Amino acid sequence: MKRGTRGMGRVYQRGGVWWIAYYHDGRKHRESSGSSRRPDAVALLKRRHEELGKGRPVREAEKVLLTDLRALIDADYQLNNRRSGRRIDLSWSHLTAFFGEKEKAVTITAPRLAAYVTTRNEEGAASATIRNELAAFKRAFTLARKSGTLLPNEVPAAFPTVRATNARAGFFERDEHEAVRAALPPDEGDVAEFLFWSGWRKGEALGLQWRNVDEAAGVIRIEHTKSGEPRTLPYGALPALEALIAHRRELTDAVQKARGMVVSHVFHRNGEPIVTFYRSWAKACVSAGLGQDVRDAEGRLLRRTVARIPHDYRRSAARNLSRAGVPERVIMQLCGWKTRSVFDRYRIVAERDLAEGLAKLAEAPPAAATARVERLKKAGPR
Image (cartoon, rainbow, N blue to C red; front, side, top):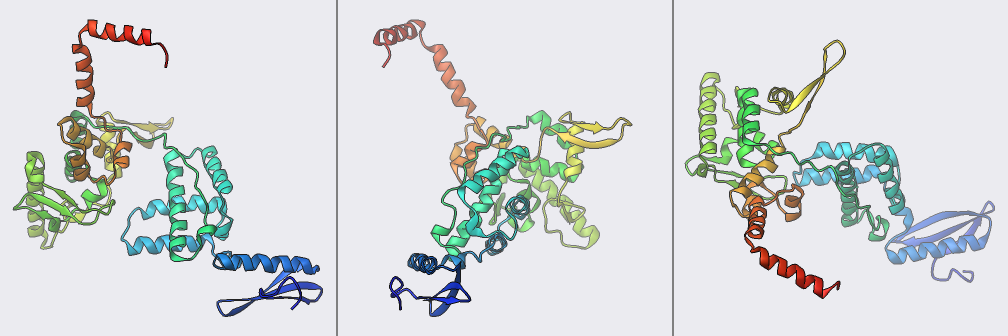
């Protein structure tokens, strides 16, 4: 053993190139320094020895590719019955298009992430979209760290902060909702009615089954939601919802009798679950004056643009509950917001509180307000 490598391994020469050899976890590792100089090999051996002190050689982490990170996300979604798989697919397609599927995970650094954000901005991606893409990437690295696939020092130290500037702010007024509902096919119209009063997500309404409905107690209970928290909706307390569920029960019983089948979903088309109703929704919005048809020079329909989407019902229901004086904590439980920050993102304003504040200002004696202004002037700047 020559000086400089005692206790770390050894360096040796092969064909004019210096190599290093060391043991880790009972296995012997050999690696070329790529240099004809012995000091370079010694320096490499010392570097590998330092890495071992942190947990393992960098070479092992270099085997982890972005495809491996995606596999961790897929496994996590299956294990925890998570949704939004389509969103992950879309986010990951943009990430791999920029970094490459075969890119090494350890090469993803904060500067490269910042460059990704810049590129996506130049491509015209919305701020919320970029946030979702970064969140998917961050989740993948978190899973890699927790599973031991990567060590803490092998994941990006920080991810760029992107503020969402394109958050939707659409609300349904009662007459707008009634117009859209009337233009929808009856079954889809019933879904819209449920969303308007409950504030649930569209997927939760379409997935609602009769086994979740306690008709005797007038309560709907679901265990699996996007937030991961069970949800309870005492629909019997609201006549509009109570009438809607009773109507859906009558339709379901009629279909079961006519077709000799078991209908499990509350909202269905002649017994078949409603998967989506995007086209009928767009057509209904145009009919209700909440959208328009885009046609070519010959009058052929190219697409329909809409000013409202079903998700706007969540914001509308929360606002209506707030107007009625329902506490925010109860609104969050009814509609399924787990954290206050997510609730705040929907820009639900307690209009009653604002109105009462302005009313108090109006009721204040003018003399009192003037006296306060004079005191502030005399006090001067602080």
